[in-house]
Length: 336
Image 1 (cartoon, one colour):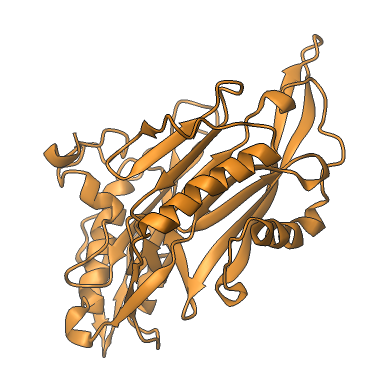
Image 2 (tube, rainbow, N blue to C red):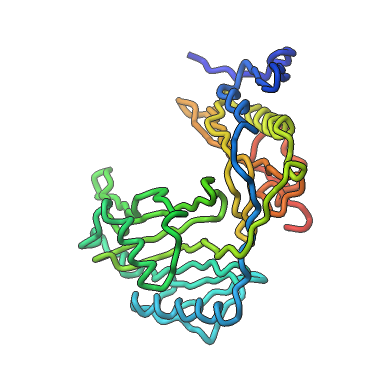
């Protein structure tokens, strides 16, 4: 059966909104799930913008020492006297004995990344004594405590459990899989809303639950500001912005479905956490394969009229490729 591209119909009822009382309902012939847009503005929750505390010099010094402690626990020595400047706010420490090992810290938020290196996991065999999946959440908590990293359990949930595997060809056309590391990812909530964007703790554990790597993007929040109604976008404006983005990004799809339209908090990784709506569009794309390929597209629409956070779309110029793809981003002059 030959697959044909589905075109956007310009019928009035399909391309525009039908107003029923105080609820706006979108109808579209080609994109499924647009009824999720009706829920926007129906939430009963007080919205706030949160601001991270800027680490003091003493706190940053403690972070750097933590890198040394983590390194020694993994048998790696970081050159503390030779920091590498990665950006205006981010520095890294590396190891002469283990090129893949690194410790990076952001002076703006205190967020950091530790990697103990992969040389010890390069053998063609599975890592012995890996922890069991069921034990990973408790092990993650104990590991954070071991290194003095305190998080509020009430703000924390297990977002993902998985692992890192290595595959090699066995000479017969098949592959042999070796388990190398176990992975647990923790997510954050604030006042009942999930925090998307930068917020996460991702931990990789090796033999006997030894810490192999840690991504710690969990800034200490110093203050919050309650958002009044006159500081927020109207629900119809958010719906319209989302619908425009959805239609553009579904233009070349064989079919598309909106699967998520949720009020969340967005952590921009630069010290601001503020409310936004998060959308996920699943698109069936014809890439020349036998079957269409599902390519998701996600985006945010800020809930505030004047966002304090730096959202992903603010890093890209408002001009987009004419074909509706998202692979030819035009960088703005300030980010080039």
